[in-house]
Amino acid sequence: MIKGKTAVVTGSTSGIGLAIARAYAREGANVVINGFGDPAAIEAARAGIEAEFGVKARYSGADMAKGDAVVAMIREAEATFGSVDILVNNAGIQYVAPVEDFPADKWEAIIAINLSSAFYAIHAALPGMKARKWGRIINTASAHALVASPYKSAYVAAKHGIAGLTKSVALEAATFGVTVNAICPGYVWTPLVEKQIPDTMGARGLTREQVINDVLLAAQPTKQFVTVDEVAAFAIFLSGDMAKNITGAILPIDGGWTAA
Ligand code: NAD
Image (cartoon, rainbow, N blue to C red; front, side, top):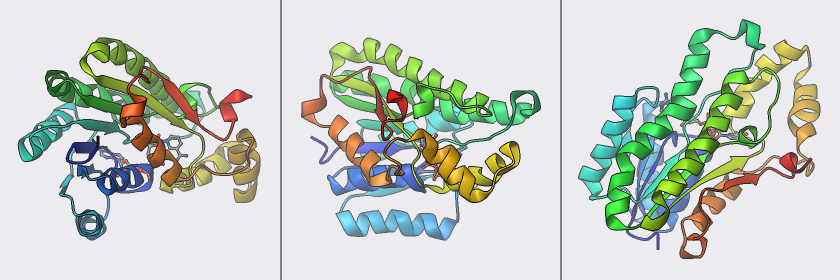
């Protein structure tokens, strides 16, 4: 099902996205990785995927804050590999501040990267999927697509927006063999989580240990961080034939967070 297909994973130079891209490559898909970071580390990740899994891996440095760059990335992937069969909208950033202090440029950036980029990528990739009568669109949302936390107004708004986009496009694509779902992780131990610890310490006046135990894992009944490999395995399942009737679903993988 996945072997020989092409998967574009946005924001895949680190964290969840890199684990997802590697998982698709392990299943035999050619992959396009995307994101920012140290060029040598990105090239090592790209070349590592090719060497380890025997597939082709391309890197796109497209800025997910810019709609025309998102569309160009999809067109380039189609030109290189002939199709984009699997699209994982995963790029995301976070900023933590009370809403009255929230910088407008951070609001705009989060909405652009965490929400609008998914629109542009779907807008560009869906016609090909519909024409070929097969496709998988997976949006990395968040538990914050279902519930809120204070001081994350832009992130929560963007992730709730992603849930709406997921449902709407799923209905449009339903008879074309294209499924559209949102994976909603709880706290996954990645650089994104690590980076927000100092901001949360500042916003709430807490120590690092208090943020980890009393803020982050306080929400997660299992008291464990989700792993990037667990999220990647979920994406692989959703891309298989047994998941062809799962569409328009907003799917938590959050240690029970949103059950509370
Ligand atoms: P990360 O910081 O490790 O990875 C983010 C990726 O997005 C990186 O590759 C980065 O280069 C890329 N990126 C950022 N801005 C970009 C831009 N303008 N253009 C292109 N790429 C850009 O973070 P992560 O935790 O792996 O997050 C990935 C996704 O998972 C995000 O959408 C995030 O909201 C979501 N998520 C994360 C957690 C968590 O606990 N880590 C929980 C729920 C949801």
